[in-house]
Length: 135
Image (cartoon, rainbow, N blue to C red; front, side, top):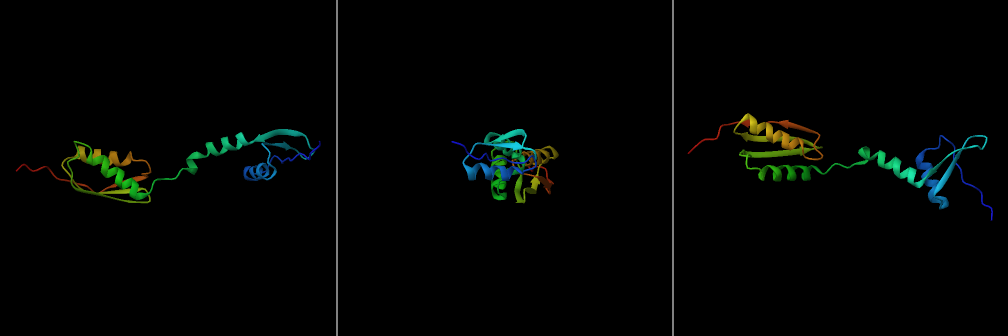
């Protein structure tokens, strides 16, 4: 049984090769030059490798509300986080910190904690330093 071989040119975009694979129910597409000489073969596995290597471009950032909730939860669980009236707003992955911190060290720690949250692209520190008052 003879079949017509489905081929592609060297400059065929990957999305078109993927459509050929799907349309014809095949696992590989030979890449041939204008004279019909075999230059290589693109397989489904090659397409998966291309998608996997583009992964950083494809990753979705968590929602701003998820970033905020995770940050406040992280800070609430820290014994050193003695901030007063701490709040954070998040818009497009940019965190704005508001409130009071008793020291420069704690202020820096809060900023570092915010920067470590996945999806955070920048942190604007509006915290003010206020010493803890003893009663």
